[in-house]
Length: 310
Image 1 (cartoon, rainbow, N blue to C red):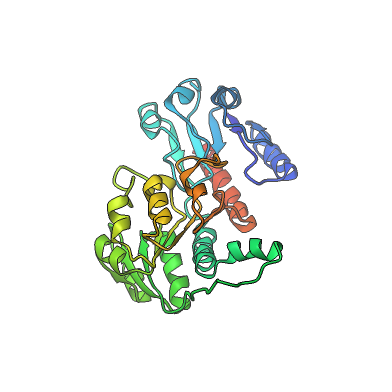
Image 2: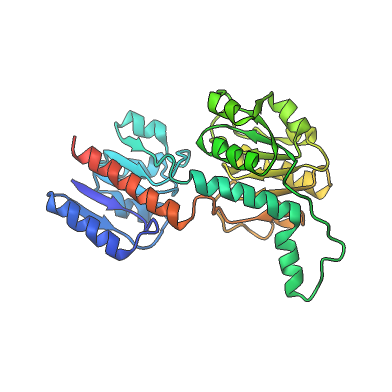
């Protein structure tokens, strides 16, 4: 079979050459690319003849997939799959496997980091320090003792709860499925409305689907305390971003830490969240650690091996 890894995945060329030798020794062909190209025509050029493709979070539309008639298996180096037309894949018997769990630690740690950054004005004061300024006018807040609402208690949400408990936080949780493990950690399941009204910090850890698109809209933001902050390391469209920007601009909530957007960065200068001061923005780095990338590579190529060995 022909295997194509359409982007670098944080893997060195030496690692790719080892993979190439492994797969070719078993009678397969293995092509890999050391640049990321999201252009649909370029993607078709890379996977048109492939039986197996490895890709991360580059969008694969039905139109792109329709030009890859040999494709039988997608090993996705990402947790979410909303960037892939799964309906087309199901209709055309293309099996899709994600890399669940590779970034659980990385994303949960970033969520905590964004909370501390917003509470202590770390990024803002870093910039001020570079300009020769002091902390004059700034007084931070501590994470310890805060009530934190965790929306979504899958693997990442649960890992985040574990860290929050260690920091001495009270944790409220909301999820479609309640987990005994979360209760055992000391978190209390409540309704989404109760969570929003009572939390000092709200952190989002849900997948993007029909039920969670704009789960946090203007109505939900208005339920939050004026002193509260919102953290989103999940998916961009879980939040109505213009509504969030308006609430930040008007001071209806105190701040936000955002890693995900309606589209992948770079953001345009006119993006609503670029127009407010009380918001820490990072360019979708939740999953991007050396440790997570090493785990991810193992998962995606083990999936390929499993498929080929059937």
